[in-house]
Amino acid sequence: MRTIEWDDEKAVVKLVDQTLLPGEYKIVECTQLDELIEAIKRLAVRGAPALGAAGAFGVVLAFMMKEQDESKLKGEVEKLKKARPTAVNLSYGVNRAWQAAMRGRSIQEMSSYALEEAKRIAEEDVAVNKKIGEYGSALLEDGDVVLTHCNAGRLACVDWGTALGVIRTAIERGKRIEVIACETRPLNQGSRLTAWELVQDKIPVTLITDSMSAAVMREGKVNKVLVGADRVVKEGVFNKIGTYMHAVVAKVHGIPFYVAAPLSSFDTERSYKEVEIEERSPEELLFFGKKQIAPLDVKVYNPAFDFTPFELIEAVITEKGVIHDLKEDI
Image 1 (tube, rainbow, N blue to C red):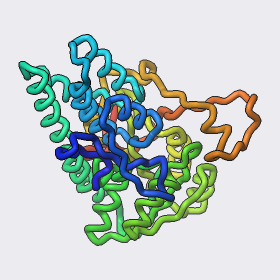
Image 2 (cartoon, rainbow, N blue to C red; image 1 turned 90 degrees about the vertical axis):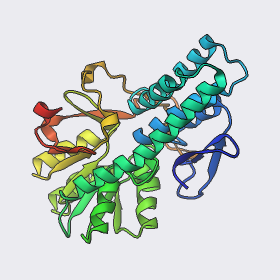
Image 3 (cartoon, helix red, strand yellow; image 1 turned 60 degrees about the vertical axis):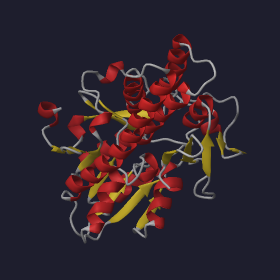
C-alpha cells in the first residue's frame, strides 16, 4: 500500500507505522482525529509531503467527530496543524481540505468535499514526485554515488519520494547509481527507513554514521549530495538536523548539494528567523530504543531540523523544473 491513504470501506486513515521499521511492517488505522495527531507526533507518519496528505485526511476525521459545532471543529483542526510546526506541508494540507469543506452546506457535504480534496492531494503528491524525479534525474550521471540524509523516499511521501524519487527515476532510465545513506541520529531515519527502502528496491546502498560524511567526501567516494526539505523559505531550506553539516562539507570539497522539494513545501514569504524549529523529547538522546545511553540528568538539546542557506545549495529540484539561480527565482 501507499505510505498513507483513505479506506473508503472502513472510513479510516491507513498508514505505515514507521516507528516499527525495519523490524516490522505494520499498517495502523486511525478512526479518530486524536489518533492521527498522535501518529504524527510520534512519527508513525512523517516526511513533509506525507504530512500534507495526513493533514487533509485529518480534516475529514474532524468532521466525523460527534461534537461538530464550528468552534469545536476549528479548535481540533488547529491542534492538527500544530502537531509538527516546522514542515509547512501539514498546514498546507489542512488548509486545502478545510477550504474545500467550506463549500458544503451540511456536515455531510463538508466531509465529502474535504475527502475529495484530501484524495486529490494524495494523488497530486505521487504525480509531483514523478515530475521531480524526471527533472532531477538529469542531474545524475551514470556511475554516480549519491549521499543522502534522513528519509526523503516513498515513506516520506504518499509514494515514490522526492530525493529518493530522483534516484529511482535515474535508475529506471538506465543509469547506475549507488547511495550512501547517513544513519540520521537520533531517530535513525536513514538507517531504519532509507536503507530499508533501497534494499527493498535492490538499489545499491551503503550505510554510514552521520559523522563519517566528511571523511567519505574527502576520500572521493561521493559525487553528489541529494536531500529533501521540510520547508523552503526565502533564504534557504529547513531539513532534518544534520543537513547543514553535510552542505558545509560538500561545499568545501566541491561536491554539488541538491535539494528535492515540491512547491507545496515552499514558504518564500517567510524568513528563516520566523520559522519555529521543533524541539523533540530529551529521551530520544538519552535512550537508544529502550536502552539508556546517557545520564538521565544530563542537559539535552534536541532540535529536529536545521537551516541550510542557498549559498551552500547548487539547485532545488521541483515539479516545475530545476532552480539554479536560487536568490533570483525563489
